[in-house]
Image 1: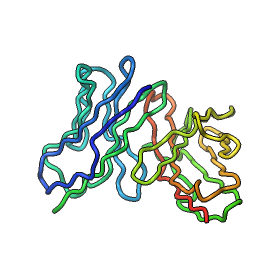
Image 2: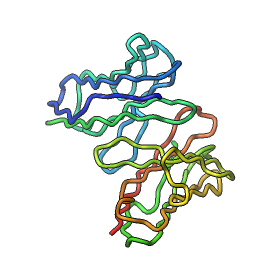
Image 3: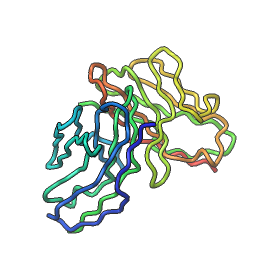
Length: 110
Length: 116
């Protein structure tokens, strides 16, 4: 069945460092792909999405490109901030059901 | 915006009792609501999908008689954990599918259930 695999954390970076969180998926066809973020004590929020191959989703300085040839949707940010500390979930949408990766906890040190 | 609330945010109950968790979409109508369970350091696992006015569709392995879902209106869904046991202790999260926005779900803040 469909699945999402993302790098295990926690990931610890210094402020202003470059961030990459890897995500690959297994699915038939071309599902929509998402990154969700869960800040401490809060619910999940949609960070960005891409609905077809080669689409780039972007929001708050984060970017991810839908790569069908490598079945990947890696999350990147050029310069992270302490406020980016959170858990990040890669996900895909299949028949209106969302399948999540296990999440990657990100710690940004000042 | 698209805000989803859950109540209560945390609850402690004794083994054998039932607990009801509410999920509301505050500023939009939800075609569908979803219930997830999240274990520590684990991903969200979909438990069931509910549409207003119809029976919920449960995922494989989820006991429908234990986790009762009612979706009485386009803005309210409830999850009742019946005869709760310590193994039911978990973080329960609901989400709502905004009508007309295919594929996006808006998540509540979650409810932490502890069964003693």
